[in-house]
Length: 299
Image (cartoon, rainbow, N blue to C red; front, top):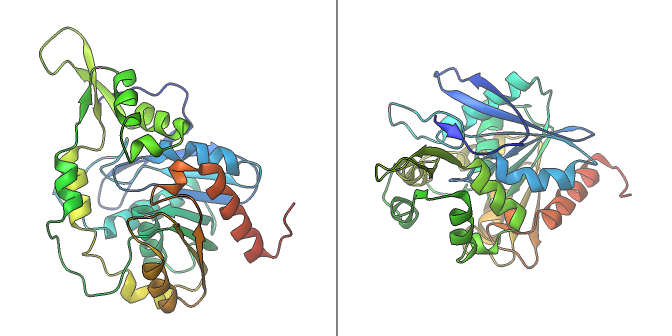
């Protein structure tokens, strides 16, 4: 996997999925019920550390790097079916010893939670999914799409972490992220490698390689989570950003129509990357949602 460049991140441990992939899991700490945080495509658990800090007074937060992301291994057989992400989530839960935790998932992470619950009912007490990639229609297979094309054009390496941070902060969508979330992306989402030009120094390179990210996007329409939403017994909170350019309220309403128990919420002033743009705002929404479901009064 190479040498990672983060220094003081959350406590990490490793586990192995039934299909033989090493998955990295993280303990973000905090007090209260267990809450598993699952990141979006192309990111890693570390970017959710700012969100976890805002939740630490109410929940004990945990995370994982989905396969092909962060410090987790990539499937050597090239199988990027999203059912594998459900396997990663369930493997992490078993490894961490979590008993019916709460779940938070962003985009692909939200789909991963829903697929995991469909695969093993009663895994979660309830879930909060921010723009989960789940929509109606039959599985379409791995088709080319603009997100895959964009991932293949992504710059993978930089001379230093400082260079990477400055590059990302100068353009959307990364430039819209909370500075701590962007710094976490640079610190946790890259590894040190020998200088690609053959020099004596080192450069940094994305842990989620662009070809892997492209394949993840290509398989985003090939899972059947939507068809099985009615099998989920726990309450699911479905949320999107008011300014999203991705999976907005019409998609959430479709999902809600299939679920047995759900709530749809639109958060003002943020887009698809809301949990990384305004982790404080999203944390407040998460806490309010779970308190309402538990019948716990707000402080």
